Amino acid sequence: MQKKCLSPQLIREIDSIREIVDHLEDETLLLLDIDNTLIEPSQWLGSERWLYSRIEHYHAQGIQGRAAFEVAHIEWMSVQGLTEVRCVEEETATLFQELQERGVWMMGLTARNLSLSAVTSRQLASVGIDFKKTAPHEEGLYFHSKEGVLYRDGILFASDHPKHQAFSLFSQEVGMTPKHVVLVDDKHFHLLPFSHYASQNQLSFVGLRYGFLDEKIESFDPDLASHQWEQFGTILSDDEAKKALLNKTT
Image: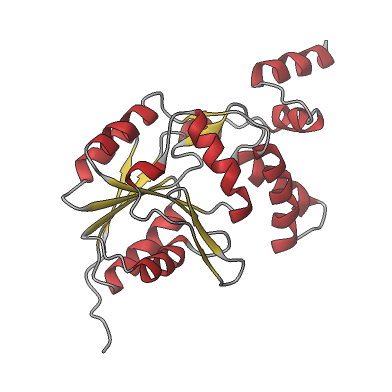
C-alpha cells in the first residue's frame, strides 16, 4: 500500500544552538550535524569552507566533477587527523550535556566518510561531547551499500549517501520508529530531502537550519588559508598566518 504523503514538514532558521530546546517534544530523537554545527577547526585550514575552496582550485585547473571533490576531500581529511577543534558556540557542549541529563535521545548525523569515525569521536571528546550516553543504539553497525554507512559511538556516518537515506537504513536495521525527529544542520540541502522523507513516512519532523557561522564563512580569507596549506605539516593559527603574509608584503 502506498503511504500517504503528509503536508510539507517544518523547517526553521535558528541562529543560536540553544534554540533547539524550543523544538523538543516527548520522545524526541535529536539528530545533530557535526561540521559547522557542533564543531569547527581552530583555524581556516581544514574548515568546510576551505574544502570548497580546494574544489574550486581544482576546477580552475580543469579537473571537474567528482574527481575534483575526491582530490580536495583527501586533503581535507588529512588535516582532520591533526587539527584541533572548538565548539561552534561556547555553550554548545554545556547545552549538549544538559540535554543528556534530561534523557534526550541524541545521535550524530554527518556526511563525513566512515574512515573519519575514530578521528571524529576524538575531536568531539576533546570539546566534551559524547553521543554514547543517550544514543538510541549501543552497538556499532555497518551497512553494505555504495561506500557503506557506519554507525559508531552514537554517530551515523552517511559517507556518499544522502543523510535521509542513511537514517532510513539505520532505522530499518535497528527497528527504530521515533515519535518525533529534530534535525539540526547548517545546510538546507540536507534538511529539505529529510523533510520529504519524513512526510512520505508519516514521521513527525522539524528541520533546523543553523546559521551561527554564516557571517564568518562569508569572510573566508583564501590567501590566508592557502598559506596555512603551504605550511601544512604544522598547522598555523589564523593569527600566525596573517603575520606571515604581512611580513611577505613588507
